[in-house]
Length: 353
Ligand SMILES: *Cc1c(COP(=O)(O)O)cnc(C)c1O
Image (tube, rainbow, N blue to C red):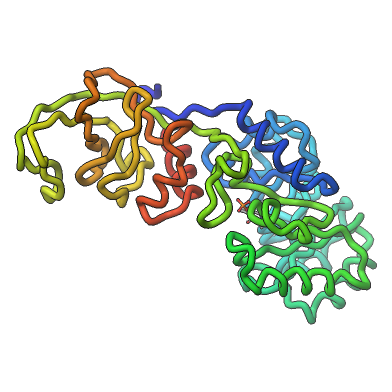
């Protein structure tokens, strides 16, 4: 454990590789770029890249992340979703053989005044999410300019789903149609599918899939468990009991006295809180495992501690606690805290790992 923390996050490499194989089985005809932005959703970016050595490329959000991967010795193609913001970054990307996404006119203009080492780029188009990407009507103009640019070795096209976690949402079909229409006369390699689409929208797989969350063993689909998709949890967030208190019926615990003992009972104190990336909004009843047995969080989560119900458990100081992992799916904790597993993995991984 880190000398600064009582909790730790363990990463299961074999589960990570298993989940990658799930992607390969679901999308056998597509190349795979694992999405390892945000320090691989808290799992350790360089480490995850090394483990997923069957990847065809890797994807990150920012230049700094891609630089760190090159410094760690990663030599495969790296796609940078946000692209570059100035000429210096563009030159650095070419120098490191990174593949920027071009999603804005300002980037095209920088490219037009660039004449250096050749590079491959991704044209990011807005098919309906309205986050990053050029409008469909502009695709022909961009394609013409990229095609005749002497420093562009080649380009591919990408877009991102807004609602793939709900597979029958009508926007999904519209986004797929828009993507195919945009590429109709271009014939570039295309990428559209995130994890949810890898699992549930096989007609969106195209040339490249971009899975993130499913590699880390959480479910990309609303209302569907990771286990039922054959995914294995990769991160285990663990700690131990540092105190056991024997309380009386009606004793109130924690800030706001929000939970009262319904009977004489024992509670355990776990030295993990929102300062460690555990969600403060986790409600009473959020699953936690003590000695491998599921029980419930009670009371309000503090900065560096939380309470668990250990009635009938015979638990002692020093006993192991799993905040999420094999026994407690991170998706269940996320649901109890009104958030998504993405946020919890990033928060715990980036503070406790
Ligand atoms: C984060 C991200 C992904 C991965 O999404 P998951 O839902 O984690 O699979 C794919 N593409 C883009 C553009 C992203 O930003």
